[in-house]
Image (cartoon, rainbow, N blue to C red; front, side, top):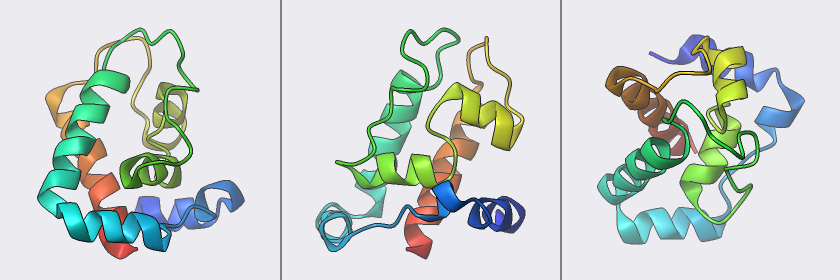
Length: 113
């Protein structure tokens, strides 16, 4: 389903350098994918979905949670990257469908790791 975007992301030196380390993989094992998905849904709804984000471009940490790493790897870390890589425009709230797409692509990346 996401093969086209993953092929494009793989060609990006910056995006392709993100990998889950043993620490994050163990966290996923302990929590389970359903809990990780729940975290992703929460992060996306609070940090990415609003139309106006005061710290856009800086709201997603580079480490600390598998979802954050996945967001950088999939270019779903800020509204600018969403617009550039996924053609989801800035300046408006994300729809439920868009939020689900973002969570789905992050979860697919995590599973591929």
